[in-house]
Image 1: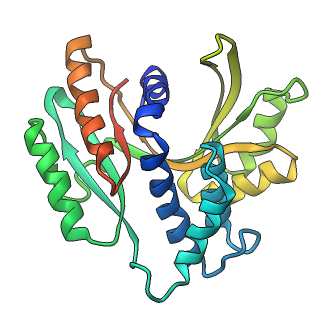
Image 2 (image 1 turned 45 degrees about the vertical axis):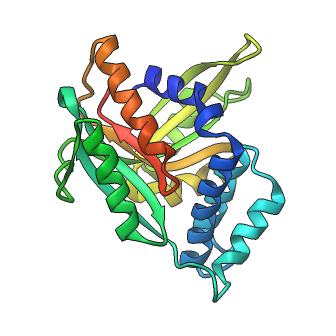
Length: 246
């Protein structure tokens, strides 16, 4: 997904991310990570550690995080799992829709209904393998003592593919400099460990779908797609939507 589009999405997190919506979504990912990793201890469970990191980046309270971990080992709690759907939208836009759900029948029905109302349709699983690559993506603040060229050379052996510096506009009018690195999907753990060993405080860490050949739309067309994404993200089960928009 393109940087400008990412910023527009980040800027609207207040709406998608009103805490009544955002925290339950993050909580589901924490619960899944705790259960799949087999341990409530983030030091012993790398996936849980990452889920907590991303939750803290969205200012999720400690009590909510602890409750989400506890649910993973509650025998009476709903059985959550991650599912991914692929879709085709108007104007040549392709979508990958990540969900966390305790009822896939409900989730797929809801997603299909939203797509249909917005002139889009579900695709068979694997249809977009040639359009997207799944990458390990890490984001951290740019510090004066970080030499990008030196860091790039050090991380290549751990699966690094690309490193970039970006500027994120803030609400207070001050720009924030961040570094974003991309690596191979299978190298997520190695890159994460390498950054930890170098004392770099990662703010966000994800496995993301990156479009190979992003497309550009007119403002009107793009607004139509953003509206579709908004509708999808309003669904409680939908965690994240990736597109091939530039």
